[in-house]
Image (cartoon, rainbow, N blue to C red; front, side):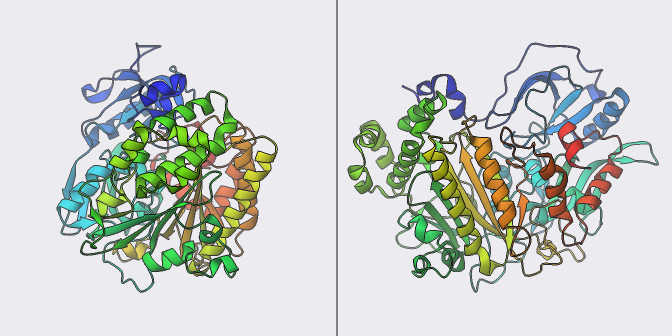
Length: 591
């Protein structure tokens, strides 16, 4: 039986690349598009399946100038334009769930034609915003270039990553010298120049305008949340470095996330200890399990003797290609058996451990049901994948490790700014309360979380990384430094993943968010939201708490001076006075 068949009606959880259904024409077609562009209709659906619309009108411009022409057309006809990439975000920044087919909204698909990549000097690359991150990194690697970190999925557009300030996980290890051209913040901070569609008040029309990083207004476009349309950017890169990626599952969460100064933190194996040694760390902690999956990356010029050399991205097949037992159990969960969440977490952990190490010890000691789930062909398949705990290769082969075929989950997300010396304190505060909250819900017979906690660490958006004198950090970036807190040099990224529509999810995330806002209140650390994910929770919905939307989020980007929320909103409004590039959610948020 195929994994998708095992899920029955929930097979969408395992679908690969999102390919929205084409649809018969519904409603009135838009007025004739400029330049011979032909509209067609598609259902818009994001990667997690939580945002799904009626069939909307779409077009695919073949040149940047056509986007400017479309903006003039939109003003003349009362329509709005929304850039469409790979739809791998969660937040309603493109369109909202249930958007009706009668809406005067035209999706502009950047992925068909606006995908060119070329060198721009010896260490920079010119890339159109519809190009995928996988193709960008492959192009850089072919020219001996790379980035310090990037988002793990390769099926993201460059434009989508820039719009929300996409990031990876990396800070310099203790004693690690900087690499010219490689920063430790967001990809947006690597931009040297950008070309956007903006309104020219003298000409009375929309035009393509290139902003150098030295221009003050460029800072508002570097992270714009979909309130602008970028067609092309020039990105700074640096000399590529081979990486060694080591995975381990032998450190208990009670030690890895231990409070600093506690006996459990004395063994030199905490998260902060790993960061000190390698600089690049991620922890994935499946719900209701004891030991997280810890990954570290370390620049390593030559292959260590025991490392397995890889020659392509996506080197954790047990995670990307959903094993049959996971598919079956996920199907039971979404079918209403939400109390199976602890078993689901344990199953994911066991598959991860076996897939990484081929160690069957935990499986032999597991309850009979788990042993029966991981038997026969499934176990053979996991063991046939080879050891994956120690990998070495080109940076892009190890930085990109999530395929679109992985299990579809929803996610919340926050960036906590703090001193690097407080990184372990931040993590212990978060994980301690998360575990407490999970236990409280379980005691009431509720299981809102069935996925994993993910923790990453980055630097902030230091504009010096771009190499452009006078450059400013992206105004709306979650990683923009606070001028009044120069000691805050690190961001801890906190995400919780779970299957969409899990009962109690929003209430759990609401409880967690309110706690985090209280702990990371700007005194010892400060919180900002991760734009692409879930935030502003009420007990019933994400992106719905009016106080968080109207006060907490804007204030988090006003704090510390140096420009920020109000300046970014004003600049974006000035360059798009007709609000062609926007939607009702952004109208309410960016004001």
